[in-house]
Length: 67
Image (cartoon, rainbow, N blue to C red):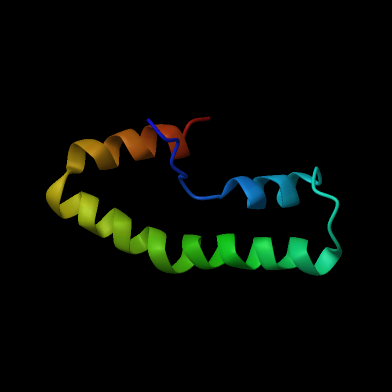
């Protein structure tokens, strides 16, 4: 089974971690894309889970809110 992404693509992971040999502009683009997903897409996903699959929303909270 193919591995899917959660919030960050493999390329973005490399750029954000500093493991990719790219210029600062490419790193900034990766930050911008991830930020846009967090601010725009994630709230929609959370709302859908809250309405239709609260069990999955609880699993998400357990991962994200882990201390």
